[in-house]
Amino acid sequence: MLKIGPVELPKFPLLLAPMEDVSDPPFRALCKEQGADVVYTEFISSEGLIRDAAKSTIKLDIYEKERPVGIQIFGANLDTMLKAVEIVEKSKPDIIDINFGCPVKKVVSKGAGAGILKDIYLMEKLTAEVVKRTHLPVTVKTRLGWDRDSIQIVEVAERLQDVGIKALSIHGRTRAQMYKGCADWAPIAAVKNNPRMHIPIFGNGDVNSPERAAEMRDVYGLDGAMIGRATIGNPWFFKQVKHYFETGTHLAPIGITERVDAARRHLKMAIDWKGEVLGVLETRRHYSNYFKGIPNFKPYRTKMVTSDHSGDVFKAFDEVENIFGKHQFA
Image (cartoon, rainbow, N blue to C red; front, top):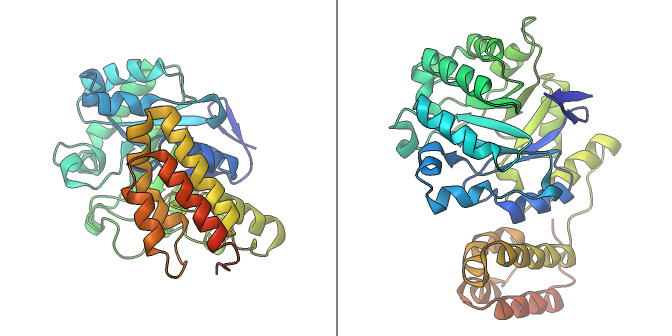
């Protein structure tokens, strides 16, 4: 059994990665139902939290059915981060995660996210003070380094562990790579195999099939997998991986009935959370992925993404289930 502080997890847990505009409460709930062992919120700006910006504070919403759940924050200013931690604690998450890995320019330009990889001393100091400020277990998500010439993730991991983090998730790319090329898991394995390390080390990046998850476990020897893009439109990915672990075979493709049911429930939960207008608007981005691969689907997708009333969208779901009920997904 693995532990993140007091949070007990199964052997080789599967974690839902924090993804902006994706990892909201409805999507997290669906992933949890399908086998995610830990889910994380979208990353939240510490500056936005202390300004009480609505876009940031609404991301603090978590629900009992999601637990264990981590709230992820980012920032580069110590005072701001500490104030943000106090705000986050009021939502009573199980874990507080610090984002030291986001490669997006608007984040990096402020020295936050992957930008802090240029200043390991500041990364260590921020982390140490956050750990001191909260009673909750603190974890970190980061990248291998700023670029290929500055990879020092083994030392970084030691320093973060020494100041008190309870787990470390590492994306197998540098900031310079963004999301291009292939994730390199070898440096993550070097962290795991460092005899000084005793906290869980989770791998992230290119876990896009059950076989790749098994490779991360069996070949690279990591403690778990944090999975992001492979779950978009496919919350069943967690179930698919666990089925493969248990049987060595692939789960049968998810059929149209289950896909429509997930889309219906996703929309309903979004409306319950944010209301009719925003619920309908913000769920649109998911439909193409839920129904990817269906031929001649465009007219129905158009109905889903242009209708302003949930009743019309639910009606489109019914049409899809009736018309494409026999479609065989690959």
